Structures are given as C-alpha cells and as structure tokens.
Length: 515
Image (cartoon, rainbow, N blue to C red; front, side):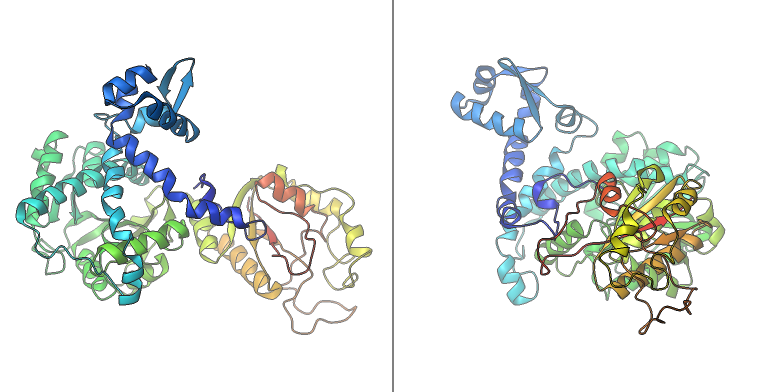
C-alpha cells in the first residue's frame, strides 16, 4: 500500500533530522482530523460554505475557523475556491455523517484511545497494561461497547468488500460462522453477495445485542442466527458444518497461549470443503502499522498482540490444514485462508503475484512491481566493470556475463518483473534473491530468472579465472548484464543515489523477471 504522510516513509539512505521532526509532530495531523470530525465540520461545509457561515454554525471565532480551514486544505481534506470552502472527494465519501462509508466513528475511537498512549512508558516498565477499567458500571461499559462496535463497523465495511472478492470464482451457499462478530460487517457483506447463505454470529451477549441491530438495518435478520459465548471457552456450535468460518480482527486481541484454542475451535467447525478466513494485522504486511498496532494492544488490552503471518501459518499446519501464504489487502491488513481440502483454496480468487510479493516482502525486501519496459539496458554499463572493478574477468562478471544485447533479447520475452530492494552483506542478499526466484518458480512463474547486485559472492572461495563450479546457484549481476540500475530504480519509483563516503547506507537491488 502507498504511504503518503512524511513520517511513514523511511529511507535509510536519505533520512535525517527532518524525519525525526516529522515523527515528533505526527500527532498534529491526527489532532486536526479529530477536531474536524468532532465538530462535524465536513457536514457543515456540505455543498460549500464561507468562513462566516461556518463560524456562525460552529459558534466560533472567524479568525480561528479560517486558520483551521487552512490546515485542512494543506491536509487535502477541504479545498477553497474564492471565499468558499468545499469538501474533497475523500472527505465527501468518508467524513460526511450519515453516509454508508462514514469513518468518523472509527476516527473518534482513535481519539478515545489516545490518553492510554500517555502511559506507554509505564507499560514498558511494567511489561503490560497499567490502566484498568476495573470498576466500570454496566451503563458505561455498554456505551463504550456501542462506541467501539460503531467504530469497527465503519472500518470493517470498507475491508469486507475486498474480502468478498476472493470468493467471486465460486459461491458461498451454506452456513457462515462469524467468530467474535462485533457488528457482523464481514459476514453481512458475504450474505448480501450470496443470497443462499446463512450466518451464525458468535460473541459475548452484550455485543450480540448490537450485532442484531446492525444486521436488522441491513435487512439480514431472517438469515442470521446468534450464539452468545466466550470464544476462550468451548464453542457451543455444531462441528464440521460450516462452509466459511470468519476470524476478522480477532487474533490480535489474544495471547500466544490463547491462540491455539481459537484456531483449533475454528478448524473443528469447518466442513469438508469449508474455508477459514483469518483477516488481521500481520507483522509482514505494512510492518510499521503492525508494530504500532501491537503497541496499541500492549497498552489497551490484557494480553493482545499482533502476530506474524508465518506464526499463524505454523499453527494452522499443526492442525493439519492447508494454508495460503499471506494475502495482502490494499489497506493495512492482510488475510490467510486455510482449509481441510487444498481444492477449496484453489477455488478462491487469489492473485499469484500478490501472494509472491507478500512472501518476498516477508524475507525483508522492499518490492516494486514493474513492466519490463522500465528495465533500462544501455550500452555503457560493462565499461564500469572493465575499468574500475577488480573483479572484472571473474566467472559471471563481464566478459563472462550476458552482454547488453543478450539481456535486451531476454527481457523482450517478458512483460512483468519485480525489482527487489535490500542491503548488504552481499552473500546474504544474493541467497535471499535466489530464494525469492525459486518461490516465483514454485508459484507458477516458470520463466522466473533473477539478476542481482554485485559480483557473485556465494562461494567462500571463487575459482580464479576458470569456469564456475556453482552454476546451479550463480546469477549475473544487473550492471554486469548491461542494466542501468540507477535508471531502472528511478523508473520503478525507488530512491537511489551515489554515495559520497564509505560509511553511508548502501542499497542493493535485484531484478526478477516473471512472465
């Protein structure tokens, strides 16, 4: 996913004090957003409004309103034309109260959680949550539950449409089990797409009171059933009977000790052709947000945490389930699918490139998807090898590597490629590139072939001026095969520059031709 705020984009080669300043002032952005949503300013702007009109509606000082609007303009949430201000498409779609995709409740829930972050130092020192709502009266707990479910419903409805797309190849006709259902947004969206399906929602009794209301508003009451239960206890549902079991944003609320029970219980509920859908934050996908979400659990829950996709996969394999690799969504979360029968996973609408990129990112690479038209192959790169590199003449270095003409001919036979960004040491980088290339081959890209960075460094001692004895694993370097790495990286959208001193951060790039 694209990261657009200044403090979201870290570049080890170019980041300096400004990055730290942006981190330190990151809360400025959220405070402006919180205030605008709390004032319902976007609804007041409506089809357009002046400072005077907004000041009157808000009972606020015109000077203050004008300066606040200027900040919203800078953040891309409103625009001005003459004396009038208008909502941007983003604000119009997601910040107007009453709209189906309104995100204001989820935004204000983040504000509700903000005070807990002031105790982060104490949580770190104590090793866990320090602020407990021990004496909360039932009415307060009910209000908090309502606020939380409204917030999560707004987010879940956005994600649910993408999740349903994975089932477009087939049809969900049987019964769905939505575990820890909350508003039931994910299962509800599945029900709307597949009219023959029915759903059973399992959650705590007071939560299910809210679930019923949300489903009633969507006209799904007659296809919905409810099972009040604590999912940490035995699930009072029929085993081996569900076509789809949903665990959406559930796992991160629980500990490593609790996770096996939840996954085992979900697996027990799967029918022979049933699919388990696990949607959550995962360490490998958008790692910055995942790590901060983990801290949010650390501060605000008893023992919640964000798991890695690999760890959850291992747990599923121990249950003798087949499992996909991590499937990235376009947002900050990802999905794992599991089933008793591998054929059930084969029916899902999964993009093999998405799965491959997710797997390669989990190795620690930054991955850019590119067209082979963006691979720049001029005629001068071998001169850099011949004049300036003491490895010239080594096996797989010029003149023993593919010429620029040969590389151009090879690249013409491909349309898509991946550019991988990593870092030294060279041997580790090259071994990881080989692993990524082999993963591409196993994923069905039979023509997958890689070019990596630098002279081949796989063997502890390379033969001198003789034929390579490790042709199984050796690959040519990008530059040695005629590829202009700097221009190709630039076309891919990567940041790369020449280094002024040896102690600056070094970036390595590799190219995997796919198909």
